[in-house]
Length: 202
Image (cartoon, rainbow, N blue to C red; front, side):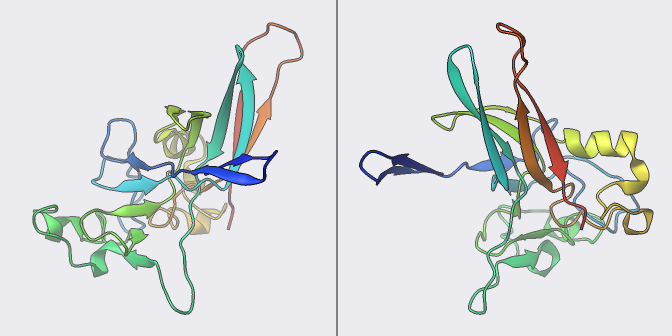
């Protein structure tokens, strides 16, 4: 995230949004397309906040940012960022149960960044977040997107939008939040703004 001074055309600060802890309560994920179906749970994985869309709103005199935390790998002819957990040599100190974690029904199929050797970093955070302008995270939807999809449209869970692709995206960014729209109530002094999100189908 870049903070710019538009009057001077200079960059004041470059900041990253950090990582989501998928081992925390309420922040799990379905990490495999080979685990027999819907299986949202806690895992020792970090999700990189890499928003595909950002919007802002003002409430009670303060400005907030809303991010749709999709995530993308960095791939080029010279460098391939993506690797499956099952193809990594995991640090035995950081991952004493590496063999179990690398099973296809666990984390073995999950796509992560090959850059970090001592931690597993997945692309995106599978959520919507609210941030203050100093980039303090105020709120995050945790694993709500996957759990609500499982509840409301289970046949389309982590899919490309069809029953035949059910669960096929669990190993790669899951519900993939793609966009965010902020709405402001028309009445003065009304409730706080609301927002919606969209997920990629494909």
